[in-house]
Image (cartoon, rainbow, N blue to C red; front, top):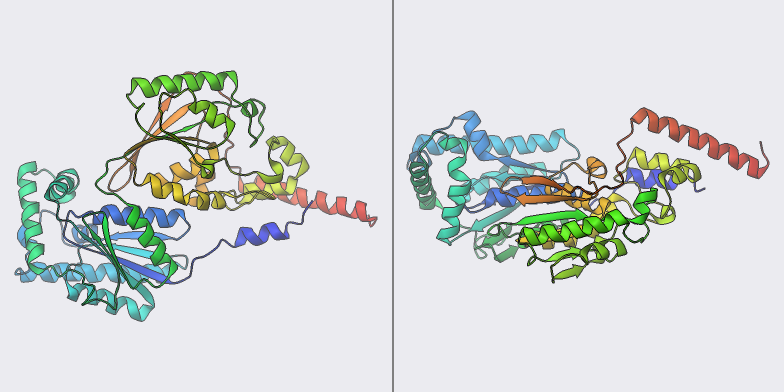
Length: 460
């Protein structure tokens, strides 16, 4: 058995893109998709291990000043309103600076605000630069009035500012608020702001990128370029039907479906027909159990992705958990100690799996309706991304067999619905053990390993 030294080394150290601190400041008129972009970007960065947080100026403004502010509050000619909004913005940037000072793991703060004037953006730079916080602006420009109206009706008139208001009056007031912002709006310019780092999104699908100077900024730009805020998407996730390996508790492998797995595949095909989903694309892995499941679907557009294959269990592939604990007791305990970062010998970790799934995430962000049929660990990573689950909890998300997860992304989060089928299946979920039990098993495993080594070397 291998020494645990190599295991402990990678358990302590995940790859870091860099240790710089970043403030991403949104720019643009209201109802341009800034909050949508901010929350999606924070979710993505957290999922790849870059700790991020959104600081919404509107929330701070309601806490510090109150609600029920009319559109006149946002007029540049309203001195009191302008002063109050400036003070709130300063307060938010101060909170961002303090967040970085208090949390050594913090990497990206996203300031979700309009920041429509050069003076406001200069204030952000003046507060962040002395603290060695890199600033990048993300501007959203939208000239499609239909999308603007839809954004206002879907999110803005439902916010606390208009609680109890008539929807038509709220819509009118918010449009007047936008008009007031337009009076003082100074857009970012490739000519005038060349020294700044920024991403400029024009009508959702066109982009200007300027002066990005690190990996975090570059990866963020790539993600933002894959977002489509005008697409209302629904994603259906399902594991394959029960496999022969599932029935005997073996992990990994490339086995066929069991009889119950075939029954589920048949029911899944009926579901797609009855719900009029036979036209949507289906993505699946290249493993037998997923391909056999998809063979019962009425959909013609089925695409195979190797990236959707199950986590590679390496030397433990094809074993039961009981066999792994018996053959590799130290490995078994180490995996429970940090399941997200643990890498199977000659195999993968959940972190490796998330890295492998990044291209899938980028493509899913552009889909309207799609079905993804894959595997337990893969779906934990994908569902964990959309539901913004902390990394350490992703390996413990319950993804039962013969269940569809319907995910509907929204501006600030995702709605999830579980659709179950009346087809028996094996239970494959292992609950998170207690820290005490893990440490006890790890100590016992190391004692056993030490005694065995001494016996082999003739020193006991």
